[in-house]
Amino acid sequence: MKKIGILTSGGDAPGMNAAIRAITKSAMHYGIQTVGIRDGFEGLMKGRFINMKYTDVDNIIQRGGTLLGSARCIEFKDKEARKSAVQNVKDAGIEGLIVIGGDGSFRGAHVLAQEVNIPVIGLPGTIDNDLYGTEATIGYDTALNTIVSAIDNIRDTASSHKRVFFVEVMGRNSGFLALNSAIASGAESVLIPETITDIKALAEQLRTQNKGRRSSIVIVAEGDEEGGAMDIMRKIQPHLEDFRLRTTILGHIQRGGSPSYFDRALATRSGVMAVELLMKGISNKMVGIKADELITVDLKDAIEKHAIPNLEKEDILKKLLTK
Image 1 (cartoon, rainbow, N blue to C red):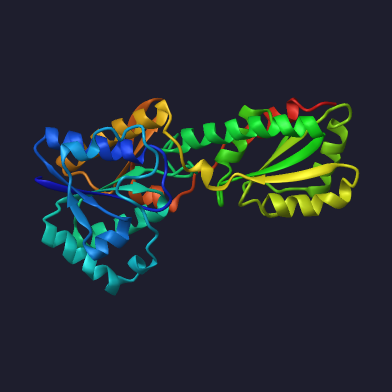
Image 2: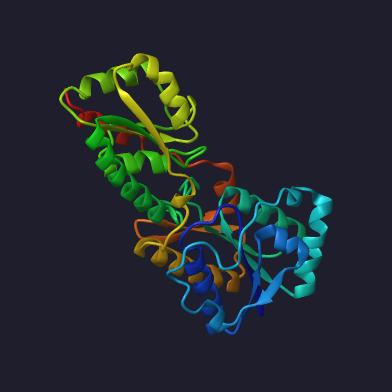
């Protein structure tokens, strides 16, 4: 193998740059040229290729975002539109492709592998941590720490003014961020897509536990079936007329920032392994982690199956409620 391509796709995640660095430098160690593909599958279709140099990836391990840029490319779903990407891969002499992203990115990679017969390896880069077969995805740990830090700050003002805050975090289809940030921040309740939300029961819980307390924090995953934080607050307001309710939507601050130790280490180890898998002719695999050991997962499983958080963790919050 003489040349491999790298692209980042979908939402950016802290640690993507660390993965790009590891792939580029380890490939060079083995005498392989790396081709950076700008702006994900859109760049693949438009031929936005750059031959990566050692100096291109110096001093980026600590940077959030992605050096190569990312984009969501709806056009790539069309087979006719994909022909340009297929031709660009062939013209560039790319013999293997590493895709860093989430399940949508992996679907594109899987289709491309089938149409071009090019070896493809996926690195799970998503703050949602919702990819099947791995205990952690690149960016998840950093996002979790960002959320907990923000909630700590919100708690200060909530306590000062005797307020109930509904804090919305990312997780359109997954409650990993919401559930685990709720435990780590000492939140009083959490609402996630994987469980049913009972507005009246939540109101009763808040009314009971706020006797003698100055604040409560409720973490809301954006994909909860009752809606986001604003929707929850509007629905619960008639049941808590004597309470001062506020919302905070953390938004895209969850995606940014310097990656944590864990995400830097995971991205670096995964990037090196991805190169070595391609060198062995292994394809259609995702690199995951289990019990601190790197593993491979069939890309098909990562695409078709869905990871869910350990719902027994909700019991931890219930056991800490004031009676």
